Amino acid sequence: MFGVLVNVVAIIVGGLIGLLLKKGLPEKIKIIVMQALGLSTIVIGLASAIKTESPLLLILSLVIGGVIGTLLKIDINLKKLGDSVEAKFDNGSGKFSKGFVLATLIYCIGAMAIVGSIEAGVAGDNTILYVKSLLDGVTAIIFTASLGYGVIFSAIPVFIYQGIFVLLGIQLEPIFTDQMINEMSAVGGVLIFGIGLNLLDIKKVNLGDLLPAIFIPIAYFIFF
Image (tube, rainbow, N blue to C red; front, top):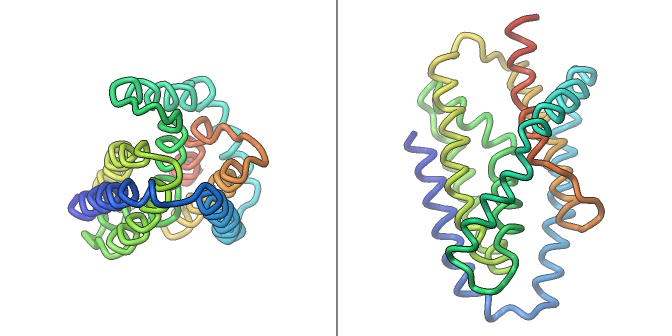
């Protein structure tokens, strides 16, 4: 779990630096930075998604996961969580929930979050999580400067989410094959693509409801 803790600290530190820079960034700079991040996120998502060796499994994972997430109202509950925290730490920006939800999704559903956490659990190797921590810390600076302090609070769900994968890696080490991890990463790639659409305000995708899709390949390889 040490790698997960390092990741959490990196997000918090990066976010605090971003808060210091926020007032010094002109609005035009914030807009172009968000556009650059949106385009980059789309490319990263596509690069991961096209690695799937089973397009049918990818589609089924997204459909089944989306139905499960909708029934559980994950997207709505994520926003409610952001709103409730914002109510306690309100600074009048109105951006808390957006920053919290977007940062949470970006930090949680990438291939590095999944693979890095699983490797930490299976082999005790935190290398990927250390690299992810560096990247997350840098992006936290940018996101916080653009979207506000809600980004910092995304460290909480990151700790829970990646911690779950570490524990899964410890308990289910024999079943985590390279093929399974690849398909999980491919599903995560599609969700990252969706984040890019949200960042660019092209289309509002309920990504929270699609989060269970990442776990569908685990069930598939276990039972089939």
